[in-house]
Image (cartoon, rainbow, N blue to C red; front, side, top):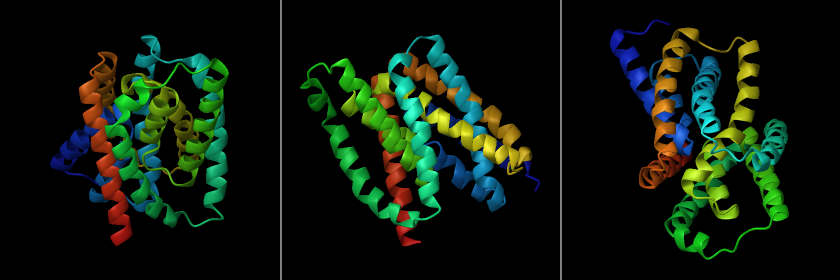
Length: 253
């Protein structure tokens, strides 16, 4: 397929915006996948191209987070392990169960998350410090459960990781964002390698999209590193609304 100059411009702009959003709150795929579809990318190349672009672009934000010491590797290593295991379990379940029903669950869960997020300041502030063993157990479970969701269905995985860390690990949104990014990156890499070896990446689109994603991830990770809590919160709410709209669209159409 061949794109016009205008189409390449919109591709760059939308993927850059998706990278910006994804590096802060996850959910970039809610923007990029419809973009690839609108540009006429063949269906068999959409997921592979999307994973290639998001994984490559996400590498930059993760590198910046690690370089600036905002990733708690001593704790996240547990979530990385169970997240990878969970994604394998979820992928296996997706071959024997109907994941179309997940859209109904999202329509119920997302409004609840939005409501909880609205009251999170008081909820988190009222909590006492969590013992180390409890933190490890919670991180293991977060990685396993959300990793399973990622392998089984997928949309909004990074966003769900962030909200889980905010409520169960007592992290702020700014603290949770880079840590969630690291866990989510593990499953993304494995999926990217799968699509790469299967030849399911459209490089004509991926090449410019990777540059756009790197740009967006650089800008977004900068927002997180500067500790801009308000903007991070706005982006997070934007992703939740996008996820809800996608779920409603899937239900109707």
